[in-house]
Length: 116
Image 1 (cartoon, rainbow, N blue to C red):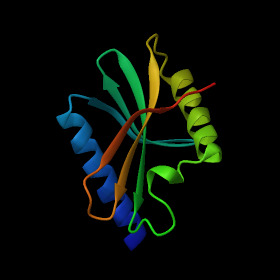
Image 2 (cartoon, helix red, strand yellow):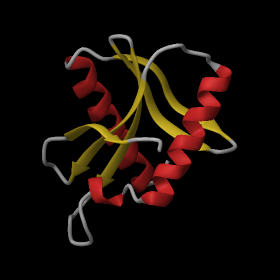
Image 3 (tube, helix red, strand yellow):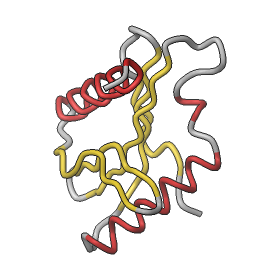
């Protein structure tokens, strides 16, 4: 595992712990499909939550949250659609972003974007 992969895995673990502490339940981690990858899939009550975890060592080139651009959002939506085909769920869904900049506490952006 490279140093970058290790930092990413650590950020995902921090995000998972933060969200579980807030009451969410982990359903899947690193769900991969031809359309992309979902870092975390969680349940928040009756809502299915697709979580993108972003880490930046420094905000010199923008924050971690800002790195979820339109292209990345489209890939996340496509991966979520694939997940729902494989795991049908008749409940509301949302996309959250958990951003970690350096050693700062994680920032949880609920309902960070929507499928329009």
